[in-house]
Amino acid sequence: MSQIPNPALRIETIGRVARITLDRPDALNALTAQLIADLIGALDAVAAQPEVRCLVLTGTGRAFCAGQDLRDPAVAPDGSAPKDLGAIIETGYKPLVLRLRSMPMPTLAAINGVAAGAGASLALACDLVVARRGAAFVQAFSAIGLIPDSGATWNLPRLAGRARALGLALLGDKLGAERAEQMGLIWAAVDDTAFDDEVTRLSERLAALPTRALVRTRALIDAGLGGTLEQALDAEAAAQRELGFAADYAEGVAAFAQKRAPRFTDR
Image 1: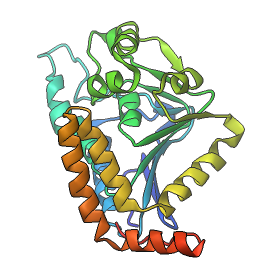
Image 2: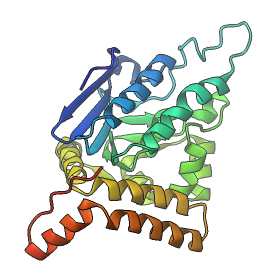
Image 3: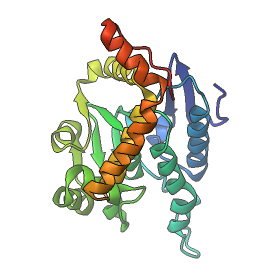
Image 4: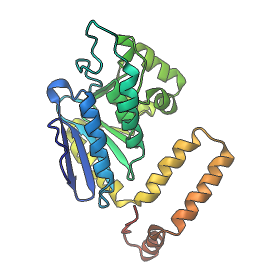
């Protein structure tokens, strides 16, 4: 896979798993306008690779991502006219989160350290989140007079409930990975020594599953959160009709009958 020409971003593919790594450890992998644009480009590049069946998003060093880099000229107050912070959301964070949420394969956030502000939002936009037990999540916006963004106001109450979402957003307290797992905010908190192996195991397991069905499942669950039961039943019928004509269904049934592991190929 071609490398995005940004030293703060690494892309690698091992087998059927692609890994995108934020690599600004000295800045806790904080995001700039350029890095956001390059990250969108990296996601597009992964999406275009038909052999990729799972995406892992992670960071290097002590942090997954500390959110927006407040030194970035796109947002940093400079004593002149105030900066339009809505612009970087509209041109950067909104397309980034929507691209991540629409990837044609399951996405796994591997939280190696602190995930703060938009970094936490980016993690929660992934399908599954696995964190080192020593990692933490922080809704850091209220400390600088802002509101949670990058989809946090949509994701937080759906994952944790209104009361906990408000507590996290208003107070900005650090939330440890183990507590985040207990609240249902993430999939799993893993011992630091087992973290890398667990990310590899889970990503390879996702890559071996029927990718098209997993992606349809994500879409149906997201849509179902805002719809009626009847709408969900209709959407399920349409998706099941499509998947029933696909190769993975026939392969899954055959593998079940023959008591062997299935070899799924649809994407």
